[in-house]
Amino acid sequence: MRRTTAERFWAKVDRSGDCWLWTAGVWKSRGGYGKFQAGSSRANARVVYAHRQAWELTNGAIPEGAIVRHRCDNPPCVNPDHLVLGDQTDNLRDMQRRGRGRTGLTSHFRGVSWDRGRQKWQAHAYHNGTTKALGRFDSEEEAAVIVNKYYKEFVL
Image (tube, rainbow, N blue to C red; front, side, top):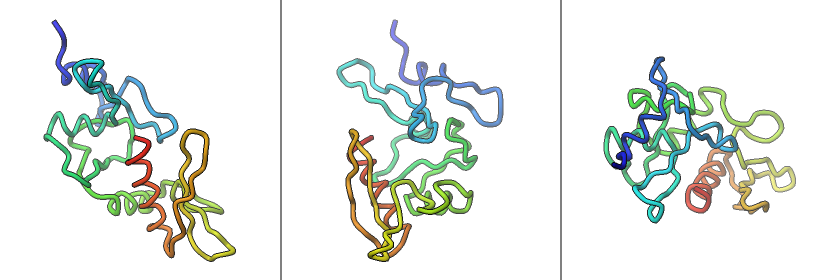
């Protein structure tokens, strides 16, 4: 007998601590977030973020345009009590407040750098071995939102 999606998912979770840690595959290039193959057959299988799957198993569908954020700031955590819905602006504020993201000569956000010549923030994405320019913006946050939208639409 085949196990349900929920049974397969929760079998890969270590619930021994406050954060329930995802013990299966992770996206190392995406900050260590867990990944899970959802779907009941190979024909409809898709790989999703483990924390998003935990939210959906516990709370139902994620509304259009919403993202699932970690209160604990621990990417492999899938404890539903540590997850909260928000939007990309909330997520960017979380990153800044917690001191995450890139620091130094470019930006606090992945895919954003300062264009000295044009005095603008430049957004760019890396996909399939190439760099795609996404535009220049007055604020670092605007550029970061565009980068995240690109990855969500074309990469994930």
